[in-house]
Length: 137
Ligand code: SF4
Ligand code: SF4
Image (cartoon, rainbow, N blue to C red; front, top):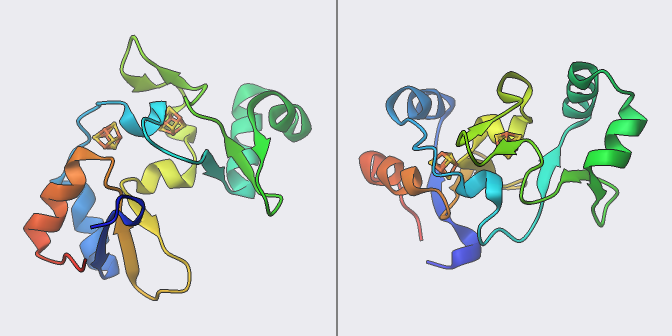
């Protein structure tokens, strides 16, 4: 298995829904602190709007204070995430966290229909892959 590939699985929407009812986050903080992660935390436009509103600042200001720009003009939160509380082992914007955080440890692989990647960084990825016996290396 290549580190950058994570654990590749084929999964249906129903599978995905059941992942989150069966497997609970262990609050290790790896995904928020960015341990070994090469990129930032991808933000959709809706994430930018929701988070700016929640924090009571403009989208422009939010971008300026919290984000950086990717190669294709996309916006990311940097690692370690500015909204992670190391002391509390928790996300301080939990209900407004970005879509990628809600999906994690599942990540989309654009272009591969129904193909999802379970991040190798997250300890629960292996439990999910083992339970579903869906590993494709
Ligand atoms: S890496 Fe996985 S287990 Fe650890 S905090 Fe993130 S989602 Fe939870
Ligand atoms: S927004 Fe919350 S869940 Fe997402 S990386 Fe930051 S602290 Fe973690």
